[in-house]
Length: 157
Figure 1 (cartoon, rainbow, N blue to C red):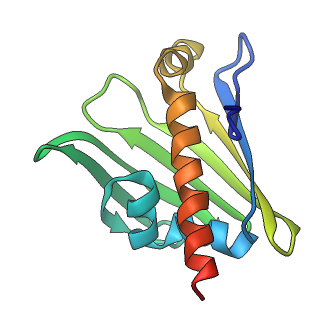
Figure 2 (spheres, rainbow, N blue to C red; figure 1 turned 120 degrees about the vertical axis):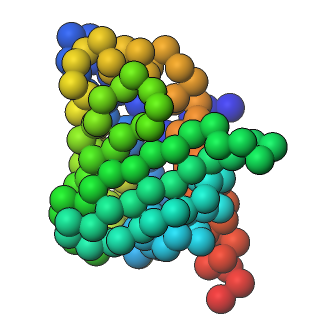
């Protein structure tokens, strides 16, 4: 099965660009990143804090069998509803330093949209370490869940 979420990592650059077109309105897509209950569903994580505003912050954690296996947090630097989120992203208890993320939400048609995530890393080495993990597969699976959950939600309205 082809991955709908495309992850582009050019050699010699300390960034990745992730793109995905969704069969969802831009408003629904943006909502998936803003509404804690929806975010928890498609990311399969628990939202500890989500302050959706400029200079707000967020924190979430993933547990397996009662043990926290992943925790992340960051600061929202800019937020324009249905258009963009600029934020930092930090994975706690890992050697990875803070990343800078630019998320752009684009309306393609009334019922389709595109998400572009531009992620900057402190170094090429840290970017390469992340790319050696099943990162691309994981984000594709999460985006598949996002689309499935929101399509179902939208069809029940």
